[in-house]
Length: 191
Image (cartoon, rainbow, N blue to C red; front, side, top):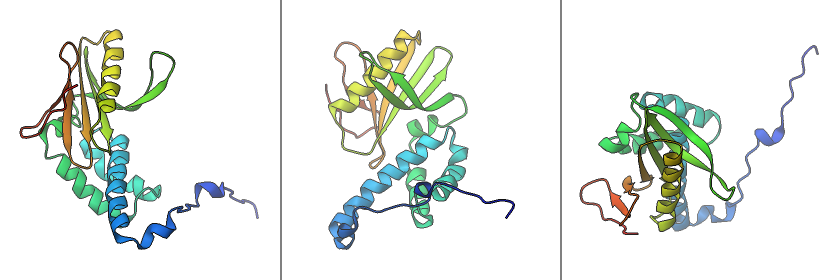
């Protein structure tokens, strides 16, 4: 042979570690909901603009993150999210977009901003969450916002998107700060 291609087997083999739960329908349904939230988070992290959605889903299938069956479900879920005007505005081409931005927090801890939008001196921080709303989500985005203000961004706003429910929460900084739902009819979590 003139050419003998070699690759790491660990990059090609996927091992499922939760096999015994596969036959428990209630657990399986709950795990599917969690998985779809994770899948949606993964695809959102892979795109800068909405018109890249199909390409990102194709890559997610070829990378083995989702199956072709899951692809249609995730696409429908994402299209449902994009019916929200606030979410759709985060994926238009008027912004300079960075995804999975590493950020060094005070004290040396490193974290990643899921989505950072910038335009001149304006910055928007968006954090995608798959779980239930919590104070820690708010504090995390608030920390990112404060760091961006120290970097001379004068207009900084922050949001948490709970991908499983489509809930958008605006994070407010300053006195009387709290989380406010961006969409009409949603409850607020005062902090």
